[in-house]
Image (cartoon, rainbow, N blue to C red; front, side, top):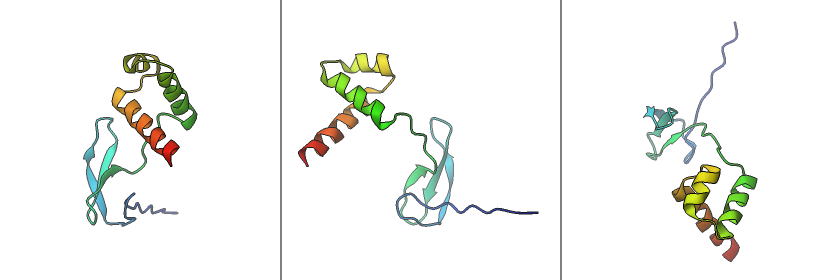
Length: 93
């Protein structure tokens, strides 16, 4: 019999000192690091690829509305604004 042990580590400080801390709105298990206090999902789902993000941002910059982006692509306005702010920061660097 082969037993495989998986050791998970904190996504911020790489400490193995984590424990289960309930579930988030999506139903994924949350874990909390006892060392740094970060609470996160160990294997988050990536909903949008980089190409999709670029398409959505360029559509918004072509005079699309936030509400229109939500209807067309299913992206929350807060998420879109975060992507736009990050893209502006990357262009200024």
